[in-house]
Length: 121
Image: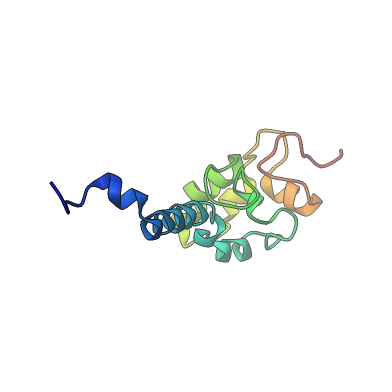
């Protein structure tokens, strides 16, 4: 029909194309802002205040969010239910299985969630 608005005519419209471009760009940018939804207050709850490894103290991705490393999983299991606190129980665990407790790792400034990062004997 003459004068009928079709999807093809809308897509051909420069304004619609520009709007779609802006929406796609916004969606891409929003999706890449992973750290905006982090819990940075938790860094102050661990012995080094996150100074040595930042968000990577608990997360696989250093930007935070996403999967947790071994220490992050233990913190979520033991610390979060106890008011987001680093507990004595958590300090006595060897989260990464490298033979050193989390307390020993924090004292030595090694990573409690990485089995390849351990204090020198």
